[in-house]
Image (cartoon, rainbow, N blue to C red; front, side, top):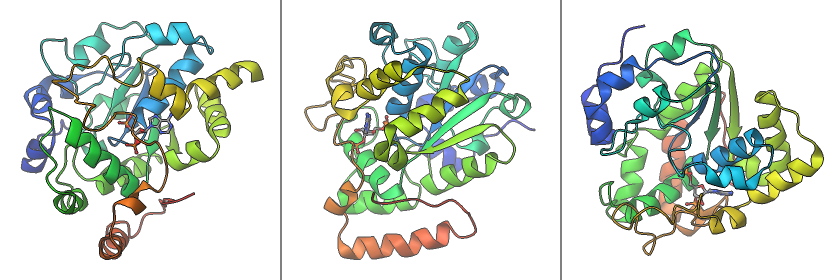
Amino acid sequence: KKRASLGEVERIFLPSTTVNNWDQIQKFRFKDDDLLICTYPKSGTTWIQEIVDMIEQKGDVEKCRRSVIHHRHPFIEWARSPQPTGVDQANAMPSPRILKTHLPTQLLPPSFWESTCKIIYVARNPKDCMVSYYHFQRMSQTLPEPGTWEDYFENFMNGKVSCGSWYDHVKGWWKAKDKRQILFLFYEDIKENPRREIQKVMKFMGKNLDETILDIIEQETSFEKMKENPMTNRSTVPKTIMDQSISPFMRKGIVGDWKNHFTVAQNEKFNNDYKKKMEGTSLTFRMEI
Ligand code: A3P
């Protein structure tokens, strides 16, 4: 596999810091015992990270809280100075490593395809993902202003947002399932039955925890608990990066908030476009539960 060269589209839609760091990212070497957490932004990344960490720490809340906020799992394409880059952090970490990425499959470092590392992918229905991303972009001081909701709606459908097209991302990773060991989860399923999904993750990680520990994990990874927890609610992130007085990071945590944002006409337009873009894939989403 050749290294992915950055096309014009990616240059525009990847964070500029990642673009500057591209060579280092493409040379990154995955290891067979890595566990990679992968999502499109706003699909439940922080949630699955907390679930994975709580399983790893066998339900020990304190140990979990001690792990450093959003860099606890090195973020492969993180390149914002003055911190070490995501690749530097991953390279300095003892194995087995747990890593995180938002990269679409076509932009992964070639070593990914040569390794046998495990992957947990979490997908969220695009309507709620769009709404969540819009509010996130309003409060994020490092991403561009999202513009009006109407503009954002069009931009999201056209993949003109950071990390590119939601459609390409989910379809690419869904296809990768044929070649790689991927636990493909859905935000809506975790919301519907967290215990069942936590158990799937536990088995996939090769762990076996008893019911009392699973009780703790289920409680601690609930939206309410994670909204209060300074390690997961991003309250330690400076206002110059995230201004949570505009919109909190732990915003609503529900399925179906799109209904409070989409007009009837937008919904119709979205559904028609969605049908075209998702044609030919067996991947389906629940927009409500
Ligand atoms: P909303 O903006 O819809 O509330 P990410 O971590 O990928 O950036 O995703 C953030 C989204 O996941 C936010 O969605 C956030 O509220 C939601 N989320 C985080 N933890 C959650 C939890 N424990 N339960 C439900 N939703 C959660």
